[in-house]
Length: 106
Image 1 (cartoon, rainbow, N blue to C red):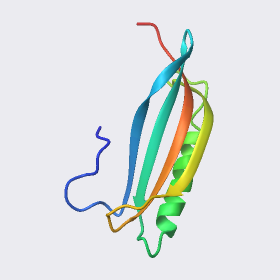
Image 2 (cartoon, rainbow, N blue to C red):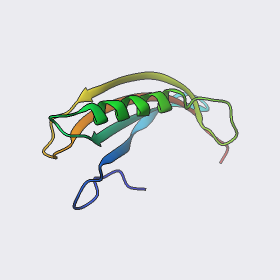
Image 3 (cartoon, one colour):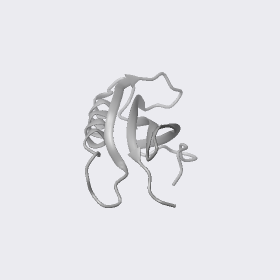
């Protein structure tokens, strides 16, 4: 897994997820910060970027559930999508999320 832009041509649609660290909330729960950058469409026609960013927001917003192997207990905050000025030809949108994640025994 890589959280950097691929070298050369950017795909038509690209989602880059960045883990920004976490802080301990309780003994077995951390508050994890995640940043998501979406590249799609063009600056002149950003509909694809807006639509993809809304899909990403919905998917992450729905990620908290009680399932074996899923550490996400809750999505406690989110912001965006926010338009970002970038040198690439694509329209760029940025979102942030705070996730309550449950640890496991080591």
